[in-house]
Image (cartoon, rainbow, N blue to C red; front, side, top):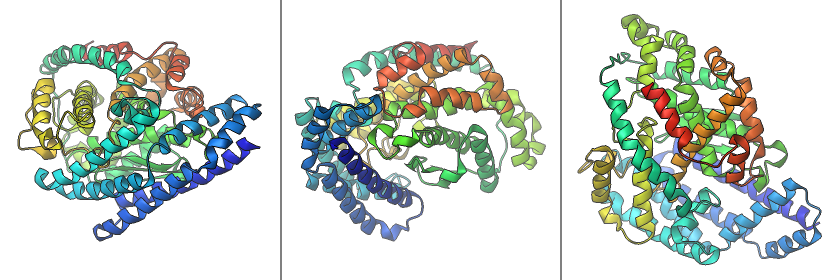
Length: 498
């Protein structure tokens, strides 16, 4: 009976977080600017109520009673494990700190939307200093309760069980392998001719193209929608998934690949186990697995030669005038060279898959030092510039808009999130390698626009499992080995150098 009481309790928590997710989506997409302060207060109050329920004093006794009663099946046992994990984290942080952090993060994120475009670090800095101060306080509270370092305590919130000690060897392998690999790719591509498709590409036609491909790869429009925001994201809940992108009338590729990336997230959410959607075990298995699904969709599938062959005739339907002006730019061969172009650039979200991990390594090192108290917020621009020059040979001095202000994550208090992007890339490559071995015709299916087999494999090995398994076990069962860098580096060699 104690387990049933816990289920009811966490069902209510899920509904409250549903409301929180929709308020957050609206804030990023529809909310008028003048509503910002009131929205920040509303979200702070709601998050305080969620925290109060998540730390209810009766939960500890219910956990003990449910374990003593026994008789739980594997899904129920995993659900109890996830409930306790969440409860431990929630009870580590006092409500007044939760509300203060929420208020500061809302104010910081709202200001970031304006200040980033103005390259105004001076005005943004005090807002970020408040966020960082509160995040350090949160990390210390979690550290004391969980027995982890402050940074690991934050990382654990996005990727349960992940630790710097386990991530560091993988990142060191990438730091050693990627710079020379990138140089080899750039040298090879310098001998290739790529035509840039000429715009303009009307926004309404870009939206049609994105929506058409979302449908073809398996997005369920009865339980989701596509909108516009300053920073692309996937939000909402499994029964109502909200994804966003941003459009540039001179470049269709950025928005399209952004849509495909977020669709990978959305398909994961829409295919989580229906019987447990309102329970912790029914949620996605950490952000590295979540990122693996977006990167598998965008990088492994949508930048493949087979997908480009599917895309080419759809581009002719979407942009007939542009195709008529320069038909050579829209051939499958040219489009594939365009989709796989490697370039050292400033912006993470626009980076190719070879240079992207360098952007993550930079952010990982900066936010580690921030949370550990070894770096002041005031010094971020200089450290960012140093590391950008070290990793990609680019300087961001005086260009904070395209440097340390480009991402919403720190403004929104998402410290510990960035490593999951590269862990996700490694997982995506390893999963796709296993998928194509299990389904030899998968690449031909992509060319024909038939995604039933691919989605079925992912549903069986990832989506339908929710949080039943810990991440390392999920990866081992799906791919037959522990997470490593081999599949990712092999993928880069084959796509870019063979």
